[in-house]
Amino acid sequence: MIVRQLRDIQKTDRLVKSKGWDSARLLLKSDGMGFSFHITTMYAGEELKMHYQNHLEAVFILKGTGTIEDLGTGETHKLAPGIMYALNKNDQHIVRPDTDLLTACVFNPPVTGQEVHDETGAYPTDVEAPREAAVNS
Amino acid sequence: MIVRQLRDIQKTDRLVKSKGWDSARLLLKSDGMGFSFHITTMYAGEELKMHYQNHLEAVFILKGTGTIEDLGTGETHKLAPGIMYALNKNDQHIVRPDTDLLTACVFNPPVTGQEVHDETGAYPTDVEAPREAAVNS
Image 1 (cartoon, each protein chain N blue to C red):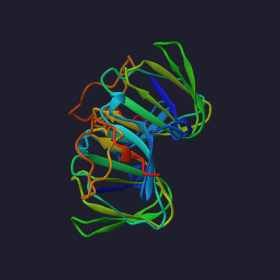
Image 2 (cartoon, helix red, strand yellow):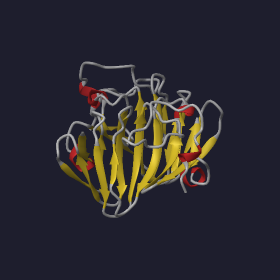
Image 3 (cartoon, each protein chain N blue to C red):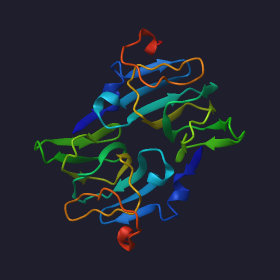
């Protein structure tokens, strides 16, 4: 059994910070669960364009409000506590947080913790070697 | 893209109630994400003995307090908001909520939504046919 406390994880290199968001990885590929589990904050006022071509992701909103635009359909959905979105078609999307958005996220396949978004907004399929750029701040 | 609201799911048969807990299944096997995602409440004062022999499960505590006893090691861990436990070894365990415990749960493989705990505290590997007993209340 693995037992972890979010505030402990936030003091380690499992807290990844990038432009417009940070993410505490409570479970990574190395934990052997077959998925990764993150507590991620997307920052108020940002416009986060993402396209996980190699991963399926589900996001459950814990705190905050904003919108998500589905670039495949052109639809925009409101985000608020209790709402979940799932990118079941590797959907290209833009999240626009009105306030800081605190979320619980699940990735399949699990991320290794070393990925950074590439120029397309994707994570690579897997990264075995640590990258210095994984923590930007 | 799938977008769902917890309070809508709670009005459907994706809200499963059993002795000592209820669980709103925001994502099930049929959603094709490769995991299932549930918002589960374990009730204050209950003693919930579980053994998911066929599933790995991660649980993140959103609200409430209690303890989890790892029957493999004999260790007991406190549960409070921000703590996650992951049953990476299909660990046999007992959760004892002091207050109602509101949690976000991920199962791999995903549950179908029709499982009930059997006499060992496990879910079966898969259930294709609906079972009347899935909703007990």
